[in-house]
Length: 165
Image 1 (cartoon, rainbow, N blue to C red):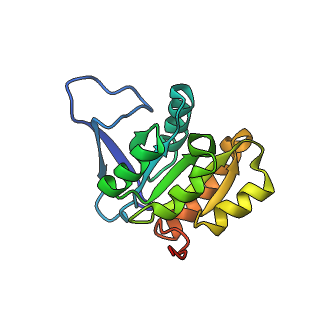
Image 2: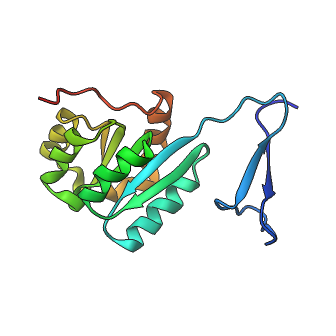
């Protein structure tokens, strides 16, 4: 068998619907296929509906798993330490200018993609200067998030090093 074909197998008594799976499912790799890397993502978003949208966008991408969700900057710092995600998907409005301080305070420092309405160039420059891996406009997530996730996955989920002084 060529490529990296995979089979989904249910681990619960509930029947699996074609094309659908959740965290109660187990992904089994066929022998001889290369293991698929898993990019563990922590979602930091205050609005439940937007969190659900982000979760759907992320889980639709191969090799991506949502490791957790937070709704405040304080939770973000604590859960980053606890879960050690490869990537944080962070909504700018969660912390405003406090987002920049949070970027510098994340330890261990994962890659961080900041979502911002309109992706104002000044804010994006500041995000990148404070260690963010990318700044994406919320209006174009369906188009821009998949290639950004692939790029982060290829760099092993490591953010841009920055001076913590």
